[in-house]
Image (cartoon, rainbow, N blue to C red):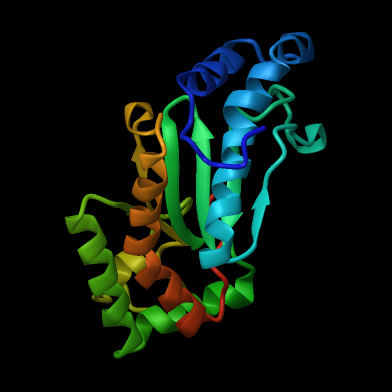
Length: 213
């Protein structure tokens, strides 16, 4: 394995597309070398280069915990890494890069909503979200309430944010942009652009930015 990140081979994206249609142990075992060489090893090389600047990393396993995966195949159709509060996921669609807060505990969610409600910290988050969306970033939540949370006005000026049960911001990078070493700069650009959201969460909610899956 090369220790230098040289991009994500096209075979890696094709591997995940094929895995989605052949999600079983026999197929995976017969294509495991492709997974290791074209998916996992490039991601390992990338995060090793990112760690000195961004912080500790952790790469997810491709195996699903079948106790909680009823009706699904034994393998995830992506491989992901957390790097210093940023999230990088390789799949058939490309590489998704972003940051945010993922399904927090009730106490953390309460701090988030209180910070959104606060007349100083709430507008700051509004500005961050607006700036990211203007740049073409997806800013969303994995789940939201249908109405205002208990204790907040139904006509609150930041109702969209209050209804969120978590928050993330990021961007999907196309496979065609990722086959060379230049992929690292594109990924770092997203990490830089979403830094304001990560810092807001850390400072106002006291929540480390977490993976978005």
